[in-house]
Amino acid sequence: MLEAVAHILDGQPESGESVLRGFDRKERELRAFLERLDPDDRAALLLRLTAGADDPIVAKLARLSTERRQRLIASLAEAPRRRVR
Image (tube, rainbow, N blue to C red):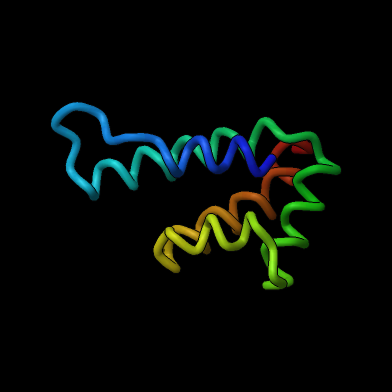
């Protein structure tokens, strides 16, 4: 999981892509990755992200703004409910 997150966040900007657009794209890619996780992995990752412990994934996601991290966490928390409906 850490490798996938690192791959997204460490990716180079696309040609002509602004910093803002780059972070928008990375947020979309992270959200898509999180939505593909199985329910157990989503729950485990949500626990890791909300615990705020010394965790490599938490450290990687610290590169994102607080708002982006909160949107990803909210998306992660909602994912199981969306699939059940």
